[in-house]
Amino acid sequence: VIYNSDRGPLSGTLGDPSAFHVATFGLSGDDAAPVVAKLQSGARVDASAYIDATVDRITTTNIIAQTTAGDPDHCVMLGGHSDSVAEGPGINDDGSGTLALLEVATQLAGFAVHNCVRFAWWSAEEEGLLGSDYYVAALTPRENRRIRVFMDYDMLASPNFAYQVYDARNDANPVGSQELRDLYVDWYAAQGLNHTFIAFDGRSDYDAFIRNGIPGGGIATGAEGLKTEAEAGVFGGTAGLEYDPCYHQLCDDVANLNATAWELNTKLVAHSVATFARSFEGFPE
Ligand code: PHE
Ligand code: ZN
Ligand code: ZN
Ligand code: ZN
Image (cartoon, rainbow, N blue to C red):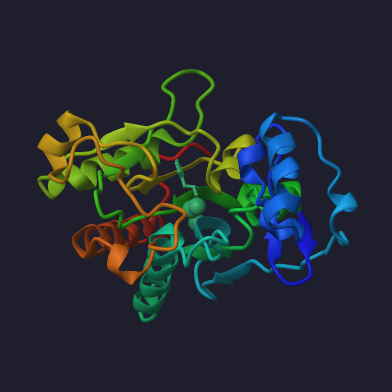
């Protein structure tokens, strides 16, 4: 990341010239034109020729909160990311998930738990899953084993939503947790609702967990993908339109949320916590 003193962060790769904002090189008009042309041709441009480049180191912080009660050797963990992209406020992505966690944590007070419950508000997800990657990498083998399941809650209120469940592979080398996947599927069915499966594509904070042997999963309502005709039939909304047309944009504000999806999914977050706070029966050891 290159910082220009007054324009904020610049990011992008040379293979993707459209990602560079030449204006932030401090050039404009006729001065900028040859640089723009060079970037668009895919050629390498030495930014240091145009700006006083400084590389900043920024410290960010995960927020982790755990119940004082409950067996600390058997924890259910859940998380959402507290950062947004620079382009917008990130209210669906991921204000919706972080707020669901806050609500469930608040409501959990006063209930007895058998297993410990650990909440995470991850930092720097949008910079490459940095907060959750760091957290999992820093776990000792014993601390790793104490986390029996990780549940990812990233984007729960997309305006053109689908009820998406991360699918766990059904084979000898499973990715993710089949038990958790089934909990979500069964709950939607009990509400008379449908779901669709999505693949673990490594784009959210479950990634470090499942790559390090901790069963994981989660739900979402969709990002930049387009809703299919079949999904519009099942969930309503608009076929051929993004699940979240404001994904990673300035308009991902409070008006971008679908309150029905948020409330329903927050109840499912509560159900997932209540289930595993009570028991891990049926879960692999
Ligand atoms: N984690 C992505 C983000 O924060 C959202 C996403 C998750 C998109 C999973 C697609 C699939 O931008
Ligand atoms: Zn126990
Ligand atoms: Zn995002
Ligand atoms: Zn996100």
